[in-house]
Image (cartoon, rainbow, N blue to C red):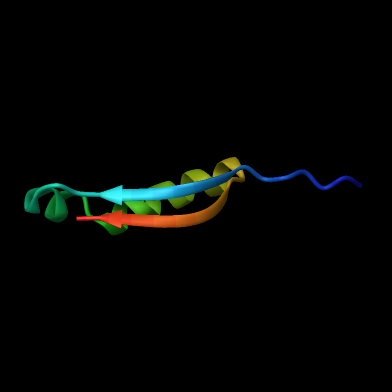
Length: 51
């Protein structure tokens, strides 16, 4: 059985204002992106975070 390669992706989260930090946190962004990757069977190769 041939093993297929997963698409590798990098997660990039950022917020630019304190209001965004309170309303749409980095953790919330990561959670949604990780769920998207799992659903699409993407491999997370790395994560970047910017505040």
